[in-house]
Image (tube, rainbow over all chains, first blue to last red; front, side, top):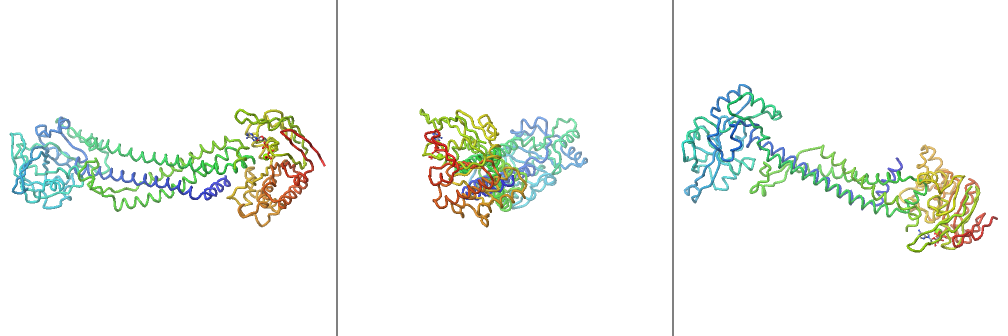
Length: 414
Length: 225
Ligand SMILES: Nc1ncnc2c1ncn2[C@@H]1O[C@H](COP(=O)(O)OP(=O)(O)OP(=O)(O)O)[C@@H](O)[C@H]1O
Ligand SMILES: [Mg+2]
């Protein structure tokens, strides 16, 4: 065995170029896999965070009928006494904040915006004092100031502001339908938020819930109560716990996972993409190793005839060539993992700026611009082991071909 | 020790059948130094391959040390060769990435001998064939004659009963060829190993203690001297 290993490695040095090219192809494939896996994983982690921080919170309490009608943003399917529920949650150590979302038209005035215009929008009314207990908008302020309770002010997402040419101090008019019929609100843009979640940043209009309540005659009702849960909490069991606290009241609790089902399905599909790359490495190893071994065996067919004449068994010959295949795989894996670590180091510390795509296109990930990687030793080890395994296995087929050739034919070969 | 009885070997090349051996019978005793001679295409290589258990006959029987070859399975033949037969080739067939020492030790590694024994026997045989001091050279740094000496050491190191050599001197100049034959003869006498070698060179035939002449796949003459 020791002899076979030493022979295999000596034979690898015999065809340096071919060994290096095959190992190099495996290494590049491996690096790509490590890199892309890291990027997707990083994107997922950041997306989930940005989803919870700016979109769904950890969980949300809604009127039972709200979720299926959510696209209309109905104000009449609401939570009648949100403050009571929030107090109850607080007594049980759970932070929560009420919100109201509604849709209508935004009227842009030519005095501020240069020309008149209107566009359909949706507005999120928040409790300025409590919203930061659950969401993280407080730290995203780019210009102006945060909302004050009860004022006729509005915050706007920076991409939205850019798209319509809005600035702090401009006035907008919102026209919508409240519980007492159509209303118009004149609101001053008091601040611009640069929200890292592009889906939010592209559309965000945020106003104080007290102001909205008054205009829309909501009588203290809210459309949702958002709940913050600890980072590593078991969301599903907490949801059940909250549901029990609510007992009845026509209310339901949804976890962020349930609300973001579309996103999670998409992330799953993208993870399949990195599986494709693993498959690609498989093909590289298959074609590369088979071909390299085939050439090596063909060139050494006479030597093989000699070894078989001297009584080397088919099993040992197979083993010898499998070790050679494994050798190529090991070189490829070591180099590939090293390259992967270097690439990943750059990905983690510098990242890739995808803002040119993400600014105008929704690709699902809740990342505004820079994709960063994460360290995932499990992926590296798994991919390296698989590469070696593939490489070893793909030496088998050409070796079988050689073993099937009869010995005199091997020896006669020029 | 080797009994060849009425052996037939046909090659099929498309429609035509080449009758390489057409009923060859021969008995070789232990320790003989036999030359199989004959013109090109007379069946020398075919006969050596059959005795060497690396080819299959179409008729007749060969037995070596009372073991019948034709009924052996592939694995049994491999094991039989590993223990009983040594080979010397016209083109030496050394492994180029291994040193002279490693090329010889390779054969013993197949027998799973302890490292110390491998080392001792390899060094001893290399000294015997006159390669002392060149153990760590690779084939590329050895002359043709020296390479064939390594091959002889490789064939001898496991102390086989029989060594088969197909045209062992055909790639060497006549001077070196003689040296190789002298060495083979010396080893034959010293180790009592049976040598069977083929040639079409009359100078080489002169070395043999027994000359078997093949012609068209049949034995044409068989003389001891
Ligand atoms: N694999 C093969 N397929 C077809 N015919 C073959 C094959 N091997 C040998 N022969 C034929 O069998 C005959 C005997 O061949 P063999 O190689 O035994 O002769 P030889 O005496 O060794 O000749 P040489 O001196 O040229 O080596 C020749 O006619 C040869 O063409
Ligand atoms: Mg021949």
